[in-house]
Image (cartoon, rainbow, N blue to C red; front, side, top):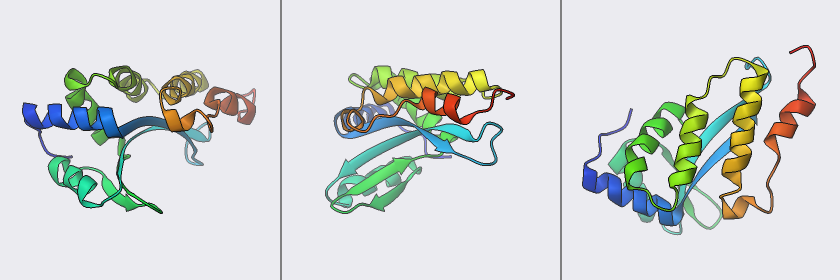
Length: 153
C-alpha cells in the first residue's frame, strides 16, 4: 500500500499539495451500503502537463493519473492509502493542516449508524468549504442524507 517516504520527500510532497492540491470529501450513492451512501476522501493534484503529476505516482506508489480536458490529475481515492498519506503529510503541511485534520477525522469515524453517516457528511460539508472550486457548486451533504433516508433507519 504505497511506498514509505523519507522526511524530505514527505515535506516536499506536503508543500506541493499545500500549493497545488486539494483534499476533498465526497458523498457518493452506494447501493451496497446500509444507508445508501458513503463518504470518501479524495486527494488530488492537477497540473497542465502529465510529467508534472506522474512523478507523484512514482514517488508514492498510490493513486492514478487521469487526463482531463485540459490537464492531468493525480488522484488518490483508496481510503487506506489516503489515510496513510495524510498521516505522513500532516506534520509538514501548513496551508492544508485543517483539511488534513478533518479528512483524518472522517477516515477514523465509525460508520455503523445513520447518526455516524450524518456526522461524516457534516464534516464533508466543513471540508468542502475550504476548497475554492467547491464554493460555487457546494452541496449540503448532511441534508442530502436526511432527505434520502427513511425514518425507520
